[in-house]
Image 1: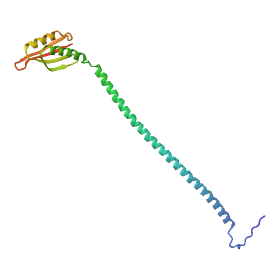
Image 2 (image 1 turned 90 degrees about the horizontal axis):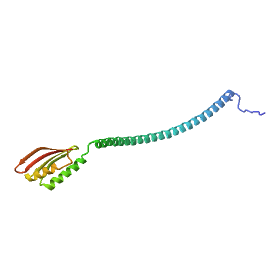
Image 3 (image 1 turned 90 degrees about the vertical axis):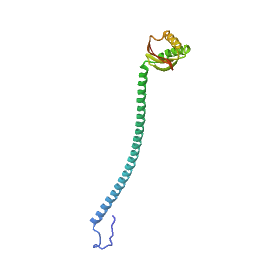
Image 4 (image 1 turned 180 degrees about the horizontal axis):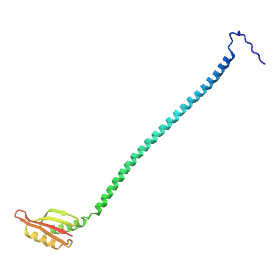
Length: 178
C-alpha cells in the first residue's frame, strides 16, 4: 500500500470533497468538450450535405424549366401544324377551278386565233366563268360567237350584255356554266 505523505500543514490542505468535486467537474468538462466537438462536426457535415443537395435540386429545377419551355414550343408547333392541316383539308374540300381554267384556255385560244378581239375582264369560279370581250368590228364578233357555239365543254353559255361604241367597237359579256 502506498502511503501519501503530505507536507502541507493541515489548515492549508484542500478538503477531499473539493478535490473530488474538482475531479468530477474536470471529467464533465472533458466529456462536454468532446460532445461539443462532435456536434460541431455533425453540424458542419449536415450543412455541407444540405448545401450540395440544394445545389442539385436547383440544377434539377432549372433543367425541368428548360424542358417545360421546350415542350411548350413543340406544343405550339403541333398546334400550328394542326391548324395548317385543317386549313389544307378545308381548301382541298373546296371545288377546284383547275377544270374551269383548262376549259377557259381552250376558249381563249379559239377566240384569239379566229378574231382580233381582246379580253377586258375574266372572272373564273369553280362552277362558272364570266368574260368581257372587245371586238373592233362585227366580223370578228360573228367569228367569236360561232366559236362559242362550237364549245362542248360548257353546258350553258349566257349572253349578259352586248354593246357598241363607235370608238372601241363591240363589247360582249358572257357567262359560261358547267
